[in-house]
Length: 248
Length: 94
Image 1 (tube, each protein chain N blue to C red):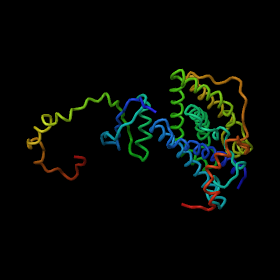
Image 2: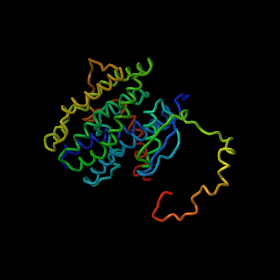
Image 3: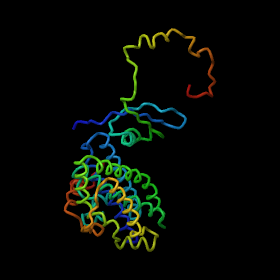
Image 4: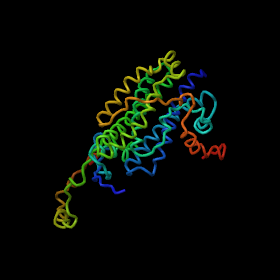
């Protein structure tokens, strides 16, 4: 298989898999039952999306879909640094989500139109779910940003800490460039303009400030991750590492 | 954590043509959140095509203790029931 295509699929699948794993940590710990279920639903949507992509790779490479999430090393995961960041509290979780959902929604809307019909089909299926994720996280950001003094402060702190991860989705890797050049894949520069505009409108409506000066953290698309990734994988991969070939 | 959000009652229309049916209740800060919560809690398995939410406090309910004078007088008035007609098989949802 074309290596750039495989890399593009893994970047996409790993984002959803790792964020799904992160969100699933909220299961049983949500602030109220209704939000606990809402986040679990979103986690399942994301893991389901990742599975379609891992299944596609498995069918083409003659492997098992489980090999990709459970048997790869940290440096072989190509997800964004954003999605591996810890949940911290509801404010951090919602800011991380609203940044990712904006990228994810507009990204899928473009992949739907690419020349690779298998990828276009998976994008078309997932984009409906992601449209709901985007509505959900946007409303929470507005609700809490434009809420009480304390909720506004906590949301602002989350924005200040997470903003440095918001640019990486739009920095093209070699695989992104290949997809754009040969498969009519997303133009990430164009995508950034559209997605950021929508994101900043939500931030403004929430009475929050997007920081002017910001460092950019990147490396995830090349397998260079933050210190949190190893712990996440240790939890996620434990069963297959401890009991290789375990099935249930 | 104490949950101070008001209680909402949830009604779901399972398919077009049928009426909304009460399915349960949930807590939410406002009607918009109640609608989203209802979607997440009550329609995970394709249960519906439409959702209504209404604040439980806005429902005026009859007192169960009043049952004897509200409902019992109807029980011996069989002539109010259209049981003397044959309903054709083709008529559904009667």
